[in-house]
Image (cartoon, helix red, strand yellow):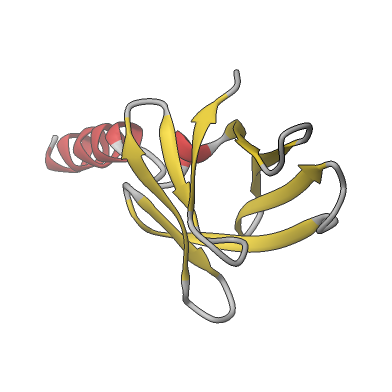
Length: 112
């Protein structure tokens, strides 16, 4: 009976665990006027991988190209670079993240 209770407790604990980076999964966007006639839009797509998460950032117009980062959770609200351990994405508010993927921090809104 004791073993059955231990198995039940272990199953309950495992099923109650939430992946720390799960809130980041999805598409995030930020648009910024860069001239009187042009707007730059950054799109970040975060997906789950075997080793954590992957963030792919693109800009439109494609001035700065595509960059890819492999990330791991630091906490419920922060993903860090798997190699350098630098903070790359942080939950900032409901349906928003702060991105440190490029030269300056940007706040992005969930697109989906």
